[in-house]
Image (tube, rainbow, N blue to C red; front, top):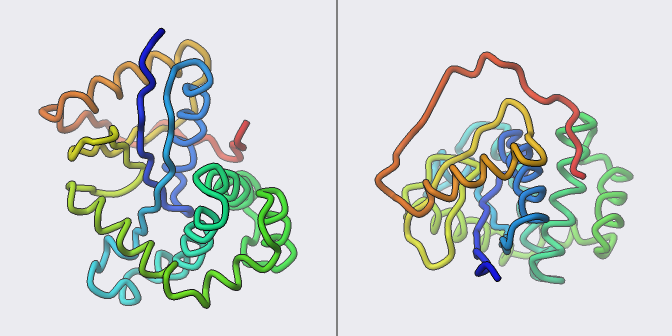
Length: 207
């Protein structure tokens, strides 16, 4: 039996690249022994590590979603964060919905099996702000340059990406994982890149 691969996936809730990579990785994890721990990486904190509130407006605005995700994990663990991230991602990236509409937020929390007031309570709890900042800074200390960000458990080397212009499935998804896993295991691999001119998978929902 293959040994389970423990993998940290750092996400920014509003980052479309994180969203598409997360869909791909969940597909892979159904076929390969990968245990994903979902972690939070705020692009606002990356922009200004000492005072995230002075960062780019849309990144600062989305900090409240990260506080809610952090609170979800505090409430019911890793799976709870994943469920809420999935609900948020479907609204933000697949439906182009209004995530801060009270009814939409309530639907997301219900879909994730979380208390209906979790979003509001997360904004009032200083531990969620401190937690998101600390988690992001931990990733930055490994050399993070954005999201999505992958880290093998017990490793101090992170890998940015994959940045996808389409979300593969089946054998193609598994083949991509083999390439990414090689990169995770060999920190001397710095970068493979091309221009982003192939379109993007608009409206892609989690499956």
